Structures are given as structure tokens and as C-alpha cells.
Length: 202
Image (cartoon, rainbow, N blue to C red; front, side, top):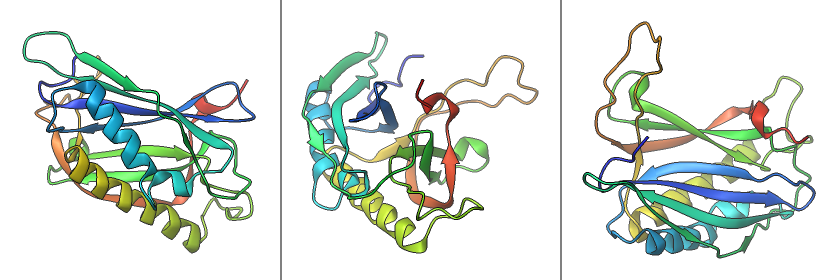
């Protein structure tokens, strides 16, 4: 699916030293620059700004690359990347990548189209996760602070984060119109650990 013109679909590739497979954090933004390579470089800087995402992720993890797919008017996406490596710094023994911290994204748009989420792997630990899946308040705060710092830096350095929309899946009983991307108004860390089966190592 093509990215809407002027907007960018972005991703961080993260790699744990003990795993062969990478994990990705994906998000959308409305960049002021039309150069996808420049945007990717700026996003890598936002990841590593003091107190940002690198500070809440296991120290055995490293940012491997940053990819940006920028929409154009009537043409294919322009793709750029940054290979800037960033070592994460949080000293923890994290759960496997399929157990992640869930971040809810909200916008001014109502309904399911107005909500999104992404997962941050290697931020939850066995000692900070209760048997019912709840995270310690201190860990929620640590990740929330990192997300807030990252979001503010991206908005200043690159442009506001947005929620991108894709067409409803074939067979959806009540399909909705995707509409243009929506600015994200809030990002909130969930109190429960989340799972992604596809991230389980093999």
C-alpha cells in the first residue's frame, strides 16, 4: 500500500545480541523534509536523544537501522534509510521479544480508525511483570517518560507523529473509509504486558 503523499511510514530495526531475528517499531509521521534519507537520520537521532527510547530498552539491544518510506503525489514511495547504530542502555534481564510493552496512540478522530498502537520489545522483565501480566508502576513510568521524550523530539526535529490508515480488509462486515492520516494527540503505555506471536524466536 502506498504511503499518502507528504507523509512517511517509518521503522526502527532492533536487534538483541542473543537473537538472530530483528524486531521492529513502526510509526507514521508528517515530516517537514522531502528527503527520506535525511528524515531517517533525524529519526535515529531522536531515538538516541537523552531520555528517549534507547534509555528504556535492554542494554543487550542495539538499533540497527532506521527506514523511511515517503509518499509521493502520483508516484511510488521514496525510500531512505540510516545505518546509525545506537546501543540501548537499560540494565535489565528482559523477557523475549514477543512479550513487549504496548503503547496506545490516540487521535481526535473517533472510532477504531482514531486509535493505534505499537510495541516496544525488550522493556519488560520477569521480575517486573506480575503473574496476571501487570507491570510495575515504576516500569510503566520509565517507558512512558521515554516515549514522551521521543515523541516531543520527533515533533521538533522531524514533524508530528501521525496515525496512517489502510483500507478495510476484504470481507470486513462494516468497512470504513481510511481517510487522511491523523495527528497523534496522546501516547499511553498500557499497564499489561502485550504479546506478539510473530516475534517469538525460532
